[in-house]
Length: 214
Image 1 (tube, rainbow, N blue to C red):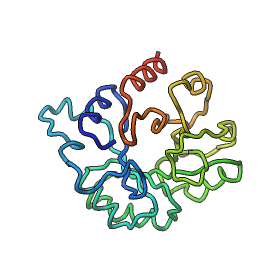
Image 2: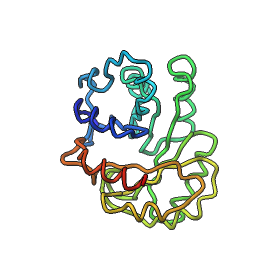
Image 3: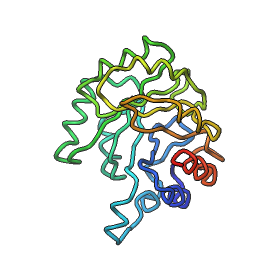
């Protein structure tokens, strides 16, 4: 997300989290000079503030200082790491942010999945992250619109909650409803709900969310 009006429209759908991509090679890249007011509106009502989606910043092998700067400037609640970040790097980032800069900051590690061996990589990050995001393994870094075999995730026996990702589109309500795992926290919707990079089709999202919740 990066368009102010689109952000307001999607926020009105009562979603839980909203993502902002800070990887420069992404067509959805949010530049540092983008309108801060568009992403962080001036809400005067405390009640409205409490219902705002959590802000997730997406980074790919970025310098820790760049991540810290964006956490501060965009008041991010969650840092999603979508590259080859190590557990040591993650621990250092958390110590830098919590508690001095952002107490209680949460960190999510994205893992690209195509096989059971890919899934086993989660074990390296146990004790270092708050969430996983399981995405499709492609030459790209997310946003491919391609799906993977979710049955691989049946072998996930970790305690860290995860988001289900990988090319989920408007026609996938039944597929999502048929997937069950005790640690699945939610689903990630992105490229297949766009009219252009970083611009979400609000009506498609509304229809999908209503059908899923219904």
